Image (cartoon, rainbow, N blue to C red; front, side, top):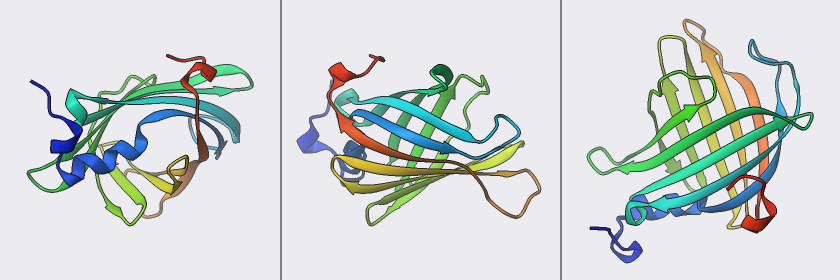
Length: 163
């Protein structure tokens, strides 16, 4: 049985802002995983289970070569009113869910594991564009460090190389 969009809780409806085909450019900071530089990314984001979840496929390239991929599942947790993000990625670590909330047109999610904390912010400038900021904090560190900043635009799904 699937829920219709009309019957979704307000929390689930907010996640629909991510739905669509997107292309973007990312400014990568130097980290322990990769040098600083520019990247391009493509995303396809679709509602699943009648909109209760939003599933996203993300592919990043640097210098024209694949550099990172992820499969992300976003959800609204009705038990505590928070948003959750489960990320399965090409680094291969088992996902620890990120939790977060909306403030106006910004969704901020934080994930903490034994290795580090990560914070990703989504800033929705319009229904056809958004910006991201990814930060990390190594275990035991006090300050957040920039990892990536991106700008994404809605595009036709046929213009993407991922499906």
